[in-house]
Amino acid sequence: MTTSTGTRTNTATATEALPPAALLQLIWLASPALPVGGFSYSEGVETAVDAGLVADEASAARWLGDQLQLALARSELPVLAAALAAWRVGDRTRLQALNDWVLQTRESRELRAQTEQMGRSMVEWLKNRGAPDERVAWLAGLAPAPSWPLAFALAVADPGAPARDALLAFAFGWAENMVQAALKAVPLGQGAGQRVLAALAAAIPAAVDHALVLPDEARQAFSPLLAIRSAQHEVQYSRLFRS
Image 1: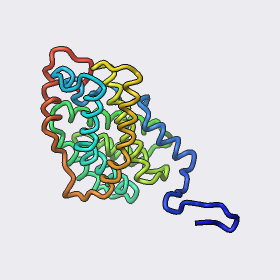
Image 2 (image 1 turned 45 degrees about the vertical axis):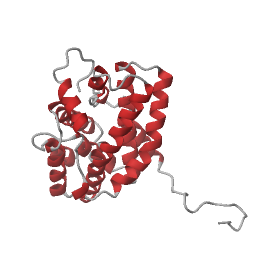
Image 3 (image 1 turned 30 degrees about the horizontal axis):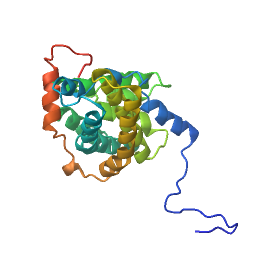
């Protein structure tokens, strides 16, 4: 459309900018420097390298792209969207059910340990964020442990970021950690790593949009090859990563 001053605007794509504090919070939470231990996990990438399934830039991009579409977009991302909405209305019954689902659907001991450890670490980060928050205490008390998506959802619940932006930050943080794992395990050069990350970044918005409309009954954590490689990693002779 054209405004009275003659300036053309695109009403289909124009969006209100996030407040600076909310934007910086998302950037902070997406950073691998966040002290939750994400950098120490490869989520099966290391075993895929050991098995010859990931050996170069192309195969790393393919493996991680498949994981984004088949695992993250159908499991953690829709859980994060649902948990964010539940935190904002204080629906603890819903939050407990989501946490139970995450823990019950981790397909290997390492994947379960990862979501529990990162969830607990995020709880500790939240405790240091400011004034005591009884929601953090409740999250810490979830049995047997708070899961990573639920803890991340609480971290982004207050700044007011739209759900889509929160999911984009979560997915990019995952992508950056996985690319760093591939850089070390394959190994890949920095240029190759940036190209893989660019491919993932291009695919993340569609994965997030899929997750946002996925109903509970369609949510799933069924990725057999990833589960097999994760289980094999538990007994792999030489390991750099915790998963």
